[in-house]
Amino acid sequence: MRTLTPSTTNQAAVRAYNLFRRRMQPDLVCAVPEDRAVPTFVTGDGWEFQGKASEAAALQRDFDVRAARASVRFNGFYLYHAYDWRGSDVAVTAEP
Image 1 (spheres, helix red, strand yellow):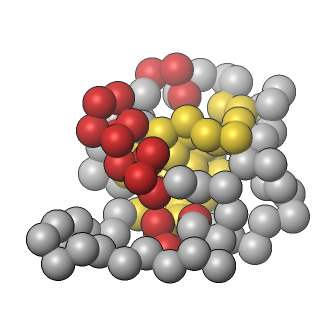
Image 2 (cartoon, helix red, strand yellow; image 1 turned 180 degrees about the vertical axis):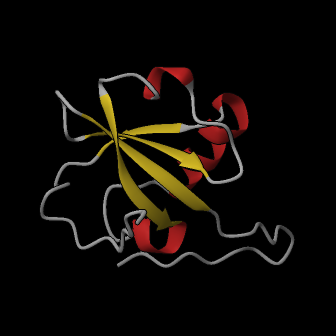
């Protein structure tokens, strides 16, 4: 298990992400920070809302926090391949 340890010079806040899964490729995930707009390609029929996860929870699986932060900085979202999505023990909460 990896641990998120912010440096003393960069106290970046831990983010929460909305997670969207590609219907035809369920291991393809788009993580969008809660404070960012959802990209238009995700709002189509090809994607479904999977739930929410914090960076700390997402660290338990295939989520790379450094890559996510860089991708969000430049793109507003983070696309990644979750190799074991269905068997994941990531704490994901679904919207009611």
